[in-house]
Amino acid sequence: MKHRIFVAVVAGMVSAACFAAPKYIFYFIGDGMSTPQRMVAEEFSRKAGLGSLAINQLPVQSTARTCSTSSLVTDSAAAATALACGKKTYNGASGVDDEGNRLVSCAEIAHKIGKKIGIITTVTLTHATPAGFYAHRKSRGDTYGIAIDLADSGFDFFAGGGFGNKHADAEAPEFAACGDAYDYAESKGYRIVKTKDEFMALGASDGKIVTRFTDEALAYSIDGKPGEPTLSEMVAKAIEVLDNPQGFFIMAEGGRIDWAGHANDAASNLRDVLAFDDAVKTALAFLEKHPDDTLVVVTGDHETGGLSMGFAGTGYALYVDRLVNQTMSVDEFNRRTKMLHTEKPDATFDDFKPLIEQAFGFRFEGDAAQDPMVLDDAERSAIETAFAKGGDMSALGDACRLVISHKAGLGWSSGAHTAMPALTTAAGVDSWRFTGFMENSELGVRMKELCGAQ
Image: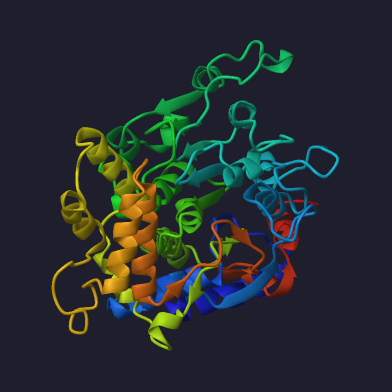
C-alpha cells in the first residue's frame, strides 16, 4: 500500500510537468481536527492493535495557518471559504469575501468543466463547511438561503444530515417563490432520499441526490444509528454514483469531530476521527485502483477544544485506551439523564449510578489503585456535587466527561476553537503541491488550480 501510494506521488510530479490535472479528486476536511485530534486517535488505534491511522501515513504533508480576516481564531465558515475558494474572509461568511462579493469555489470550477460533484458531511448539509463549497451568503446563519443555494448549485450528490432549517426566517423578496427548501430542491431536479436502504440502493442512473435521513446532524459515531450510513459508506456510494468519463470532485467532512471538541468529549471525538479515517481508507482503496489520475487530500479547518495530550494528574503517562470504556456521547448521556430526571423528579444519586457506569465505565466500588476506572474520592465528590446542582442535569455530564478525560491523561483548554495550525496530508496525482507551511487559503488556491482554474 505505502509503495503504491509513493508511486502515485511520483506519478503526480511527472503529470504536473505535463500539465495534467487529476481526474478524480477527494478533499477530506475534519472539522475541528488538528494535530492533537489526529494523535489522540492515533495512540488509541495503536493501543487497540489497529496500527497507525491512514491519514497519518500519507506521504505528503503541510501545515496551514488558519486565521480569518477578522480574527486569529477562525470559525468554520471563514475557514471553509478559504479552503474552498482560495481567499480568506471574515468569521461567519460563506463563499463571499470581506465586502460580501461572491467567490468561486474549487467545486464550482470542477462542475463547470464537467466533473460530477459530491458534497458529504456528518452534520447538516447547510452547515459551515459544506456551505463553503456551494453557497454565497454573508452570514452562515442564513441556513435557509444556504439550502436554496444548495439546490441552485446543480451539484450532483449531497449526503449527510438535513437542511436544519427548511423555511425562511423572515420574508425576503429573493425567497418569495421558494417555499419549503426540500420542495425547492425537488423542483430543481433533486431526488430526496430519506432512508439508508434507499440510499444504499442508489445507482449512477438515479440523477441528482439530496439525503434527508434526519432534519438535523447525523449521530456521533459512538452513538451509531442503524438507519444512518457512516461517512465511509457515504463516500463509497458517492464514488459509485459519480464515476464518469470526466471524473469527479468529492468533499467529505467529518463534522462531528468539531462538535465533540466543543463538548470536550474525548471519547466521542476520537471515535469520529476513526470514522473519518475509515472514510479516507475508502478513497485510498480507489487510489490504489486509479493511481495515475486520483488525488486524495486530507486537512482540517481549525482545532477545537484546545485538546492536549498530557494532564498533570497522570504525570507523563497517557492512557487513551481508557476511553474505550465510554459507550455513548456526552450529548446522549445528557439526554438520558434529563429523561430520567423528568420521569422521576425525586431520583437520588444512587438512581443515576447505573447510567453513569454504563455511559463512562466508571465503578463506584473497588480499589482505585488496582482498577483505574474505579472512582477515587475526589472524582466521586466532583460527580456527586455536579448531580446536586440539578436543573437540566448537564452539569453531571460535564463532570463525568472531565473525569474520564483526566483518567486518560487528556486536557482541554477551551470549549471553542483555537488558533492552532491545521495539518494537511495527501497522496496521489499532484499531491506534491500540498507541502510546506502556508495559509489555509493557499490550499484553496491550489485545489482550484487542480480543479481547472485558469
